[in-house]
Each structure stands twice: as C-alpha cells, then as structure tokens.
Image (cartoon, rainbow, N blue to C red; front, side):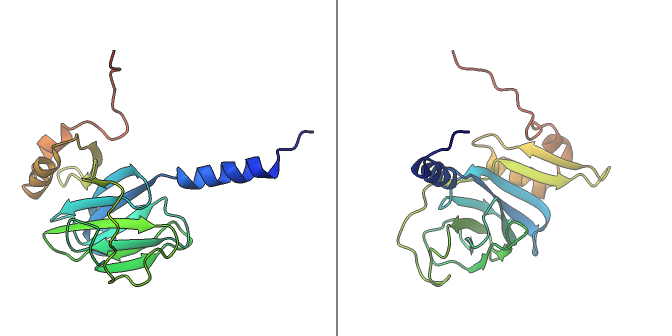
Length: 183
C-alpha cells in the first residue's frame, strides 16, 4: 500500500478549499421563499447583485459551516452590510438584503468582517448579475428554472414583474444548454 506524503495531502486540501465554488440566491420573499435569481459558480468574496423584486432575502448554496454571509441594501458589496448571518449545519442561512430597489449578497470564509455594518474597504473579487431564474408559472403551477444570458438581466426582471410567463418559458432551461465550441 502506498501512502501520500502529508505535504501533498495538505496542499490538495488547501487547493480544494480555494477552488470551492458557491451559488448565491436572491429571493422575492423574506425567509428565502418565492421566486429567486441565482448567481452560480462564484468564489468567496464575489458579489451577486440584483434588483426589485428579488431584494427581500438571500442565501448561499455551498457555503461552508462557520462562513459569514452578508446582505447589502444596494447593488454593491464594498459598503457596510445591511445584515449578516453565519452558515450553520444544513448548508447556509437566510440573510435580509433590505427590501429595496437594488441589493447584493456576498460571503467570506470565516468571520472576515468583524461587524456586519463596518465598511469593508476591499473590493469584491467578481461582481455579477444572476444567471439563473427560478419561478412558478401560475397558469399550471409548474416550477421553471431558466438560464439568463449575459446582458439580459434587466429584460428578464421586467418580464417577471409583468408576469409574462410565455416569454420567460421560451428562455433556455437551466442546466440544459447546448454550447457550441469556438473553433
């Protein structure tokens, strides 16, 4: 039986922690319920920003226990947080993002901010709009999960507000995109 040197195993564990991707979700209703917008496959320290009606609460899928999640009542993460929570067993927590016209959510490893309302001078690593919308079509009660192509976020939000389900249902299904290789 071969054994890996401890340094190799430690380096592999560190790399896994560094490359760990998380998904942020911003919800229509408080308590992380209702329709939601999702920023997928981001790194810790990234900023997922959204607009009304997806500015009631936020959650982090993939955040590790003891990591802090921050909600912002503006579409930026380089200001003092509106609220924060610490991820617990069960993969995360639900944080208030202010119920305003715009909002954002971010997460840090451990307690990277000492107090949630203290301004963090460091800029976010990545700032992105959601790339996934989850909603229930009221006509048939079916839950849909669609891909939001780059540059169409505001249009998708407007279709959601206008309850234009037929147009939203025509967007690509989340996770079933057929990508054409660039030659």
